[in-house]
Length: 108
Image (cartoon, rainbow, N blue to C red; front, side, top):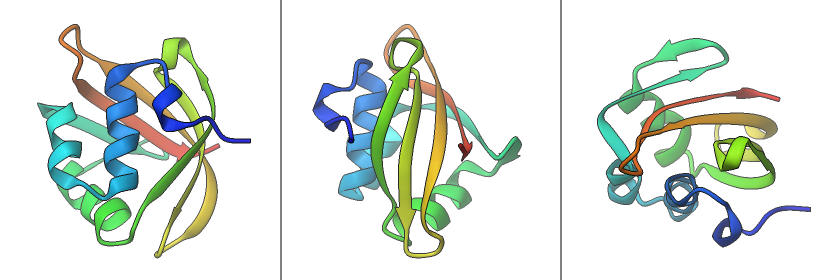
């Protein structure tokens, strides 16, 4: 059972998931701080390179199945054309003005 994106608690995380699923790079980047960072499976990655490869050039899609930490932690079924579907975890650091300064993802 998945959680509808519109029902996600945190507005920044909701905007992040919405942008991923709509393949909307501009909306995705607008929810991040200019100096946002990210990690995949515990290793810091180049944000621009990672989102191109893992989200936008490979039709990435998130189906959220659980949220915790006031909406800043998700478990989701993530799929893209490169890797197929896998259970993933996502952790977000959100600034006081409602932007994501860091996200971490990996297999759940």
